[in-house]
Amino acid sequence: MVLLGAGRRCAALVAALLVSGCAGYVPGMPCGLPRGMASLRTHRGAQACRMSAGTGDGEQSVNSAAAMCGTAGMAPQSFLEEQARLVGTAIPGAVPRKQWSDALRVEGLTPKVDVTLRGDQMPASLREQERSGRTRPDWFRVPAPPPPTSDTKYTQLKEGLRELKLNTVCEEAQCPNIGECWNGGTGTIMLLGDTCTRACRFCAVKTSSTPAAADESEPFNTAKAIAEWGLDYVVLTSVDRDDMPDGGAAHFALTVDFIKVWNPSILVECLVSDFAGDLAAVESLAASGLDVYAHNIETVERLQPYVRDRRAGYRQSLSVLKHAKVANPSLYTKTSVMLGLGETRDEIVQTMRDLREAEVDVLTLGQYLRPSPAHLAVEDYVTPQAFAELQAIGEELGFKYVASGPMVRSSYKAGEFFLEHMIKTERAADADKLVQEFRTGHQQHRVLNEDKTLSTIHQPQ
Image 1 (spheres, rainbow, N blue to C red):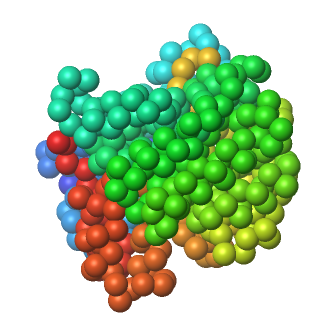
Image 2: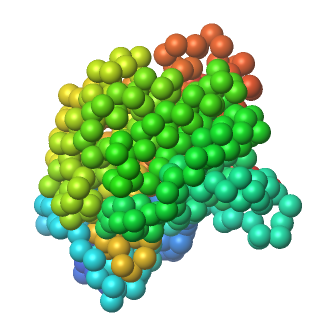
C-alpha cells in the first residue's frame, strides 16, 4: 500500500493511531501531521478524523480506519503496529509519542494523595486530555443504578439486604458496576461490619481502630439471603478486623458452613484479608468448604508502602495465598492487582511471576479509580489493548484464568469467569446446559461465543 499521495488513507491511519493512543506528531497540527503535510488531509480524511475523535469506541475507530485502508481483518495490535511503521516511513523523522509497546509505563512513578486536585487535574487526566481531548477515557461507561423509587431487582435487593442488616462491598467501596450486578439480582456481601481497622490509601471503606463488634446473627442471615437469591456462585468479602484474635476467620468459616448446609452445590468464593499473616486462621478458612480462596495483593511490590496500610505487605500476601493452597490443594486461589498507580510493565509481569510461584490460580487486573480527593490520584489510564496484552501474558505464565480490563474488579462477574473456565477445561460437553442453567446474576444476558468464552451484555431493566 502506498501511503503518500493517498490523503484520505493517510488521514485515516493517523486518526486511528491518535484514537488508540499510539501517535500524535506535532501538537496543534491537523490530524497530528507535521508542518507541510497538512494538505494531505482530504475531505474524507477530515471526516474520518472527526469520526474517530468523537467516537466512544477506540477499537471501532481502528477497525473503520483499517477497512478504509484495505487492511480489514488484521488484529488491532498488528494493524496499529503496521500503521505506525508506515507513517514513520512516509514521514521521515516523525516519532509517535506512544508506540504500542509503550502502552504500559516503562519508568515507575510514586502515587500521591493531593486533596487540592480535581478529577480532571489528576496526572492521568492531563495525559488523557493531551491524547484524546477528554479528561477521562470513553471506555469508562457503565449502567447507572436505577432511581430509588423504581420497581427493579436493584431496589428489591437493596431492601432485602437492609432487612437482614447486611452490608455489601458494592456500596461501601463505591463499585462502579453496582447497577449492573444488582439489577441481575446479585451482590457481594461484606461480613464483619462496614468499618475496617486499616486505612489503605485507595479504599473508600470507612475506618476505625475500634469498630463495632461482629454481628453473631450475620452468618445465618447471609446464608438466608444467598439462598433466596437462588444463585450457583456467590462471593463473600469483609473488612480487615485486626481487633479480632483470628481476624474474623472463624466468622467466615461459619458463614460458609451455613451456606453449604442450605445448598451443598453452591460455589462459594471468599475474598478475605491477610489475617495479619496468621497462617492458622488461613488454614481454618481453607478447610471450611469454600471453593475459591481470594486475597488481593493490590499492587506491585515497590508501591506497597504507598498504597496499602503499613500492616499489609507484598510478601505477607504471597505467604497467605501460598499457604491456603498448601492447607487445601483442591482450592482455587485468586488475587487482584490495580493498575494506573505508577507501576511499570516489568513490575506487573514480575508480580505475575511471583503469584504463579505461590501457585495462585486466578488473576484479575483492573483500573484504579480514585474514590475521593482524599485518596491516591490516578497516574495512568491503562488502555483496553494493554489490558488484553497483560491477559495474554498471564495465560502464558500458567494462570488457570485471567480477567483483565478497565472495569474488572475482584468480585465483578466472578461467577461468569469461573463458569467460562469450567466450560473450557472440565465440562465442555455440558457447555450449552451450563450457559442456560448456571446462575450468577448475569445469566440473563449471557452468550456463549464460538471460542467458548462468555459475553454478558447488560440491558437496562
